[in-house]
Image (cartoon, rainbow, N blue to C red; front, side, top):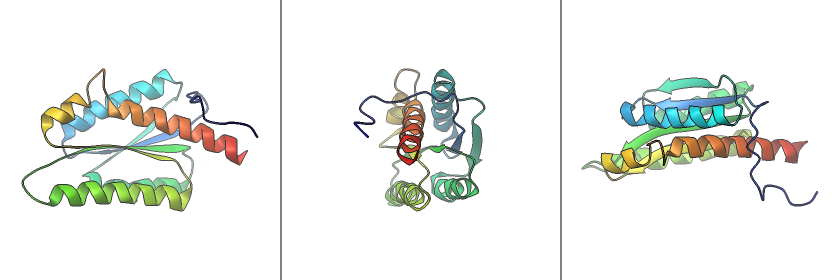
Length: 154
């Protein structure tokens, strides 16, 4: 079989990708979405499906519904959780990440986690800008993983 994945396959021309976006901290989420959609377009993915959810805790169940329904080669999850004065940050960030990982393992559909977990808005803005956009990185990872899994599964 040889070595696979040493160089990322970012050809998205024949891929169908879904993007799940949390509305909470919507201004940041919109920046992440712009980055993700730009990366998907750059790599040939046409007409990705975009689904908005209230917050990051709603991302895993939406990803699960999409993965179980079928029709998407990968799912990109985007959102922004900014630390506040309570323990809420840890719960939301940890459970959103764990949920996405569980859905990915249960369904075999590659799901990338482009949910920012930052100390403050300044950090979130720095990671969602035009030059350093974690949404774009999550989209590229989704393309790469969809292609790698296709290669493995034949």
